[in-house]
Image (cartoon, rainbow, N blue to C red; front, side, top):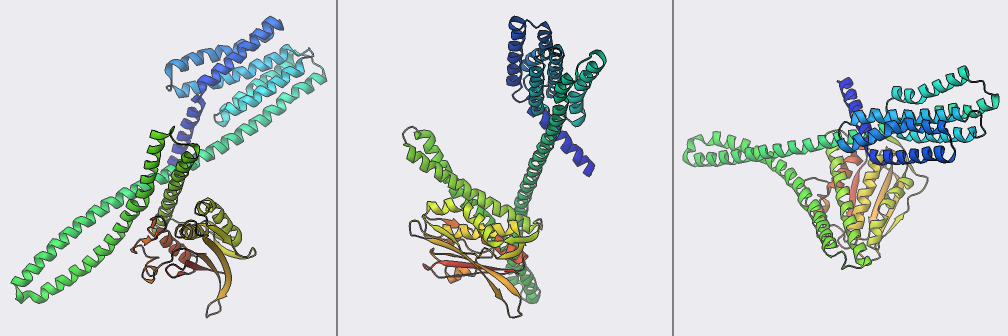
Length: 493
């Protein structure tokens, strides 16, 4: 199974290389042909070098038919075009070697070798083939050149020394090309895996919708059944005990269904509220820019574009939290604790949110001691910080000299076990006691705030709760309406 998967990836990578080779092929060939024609004319009309002129004709004889073939076939026959293009590169390398032989006993040999080295460097950027083909392109013409020089020419040592630059640069260029190919494959593989993960997420979402339909159907059936039982209870008093037993079972089923419906409604709330508002804002602002772009001054355009950018960042942050929460629910999150400098990690999170805070005239202060180290999963801890700081900024009013302060200290519980207690404090609108009790539950109500009618589903806090628990710590909140909020969480030392 793994072999088939590897073969599929290799096949997709081969198609990707062919696609990248054919991309801009018209421009590359046209430019190459023009350069070759220019040098061929210079060799014939100015330098009177017939040998150079005929050497230029070799790559031209490949490039011109390939260009014509590509212009007529467009995006078809990519594999054939890739082979012919490799032939063009090989012909170009051979032509440069021929020019070196022409200048072998002349003072211009150094210039010819320099030009050959430059061409070798250029083609190293364009060769996008496997190792065997790359070896053939690089080393077969070079080996033939070497054998010709050894067998048919008696050249002095200084000429050999000049020509040796070609051999050295061929090896270096080959190594760089293979490194480039390896990096290209790693980038392709990363993107390929991301696409597979996206497909899995899409399938999971479709399955969730199908399950929701089934749950609704089951709920309707149970509701009908309950009504029938209640009617029979009135008509058949002698079967009261049996009906009560059945009613108890139905009640339990209804509670289970209610919990499922709460989770379902929460998921719909995330989609309808947190995605709808920024999408509507983005659509409205982009429509205005399209229709009245020329009517707006530069400042107004910048404000609109900034608002669109903030909306996209909000959507991106929500989707990241949803994906991470979904992964944690399916047990796919990898927990890799390492030693982390708490101050530096918090500073990274603050830097990511500096622009968001600046837009609301809110300052962020990182007061965590620079020497505090914790054993934690770096990615998970970064998510916790980003969610808490983002919430603190969101629920702090604009232009109110608001502040978000990060602190940390060492504490111990009744058993003497030591923890690092981290706090994120804001000067925002605060949270009522009723909502504090539901902050870390998926079935909890949406938070609300008086700042720009913003809303928050709480999925970030639910995710934080699960990530802190995974570290063996606790998370809680202290807040009063209109008196700011402080979130605390602990990590074991």
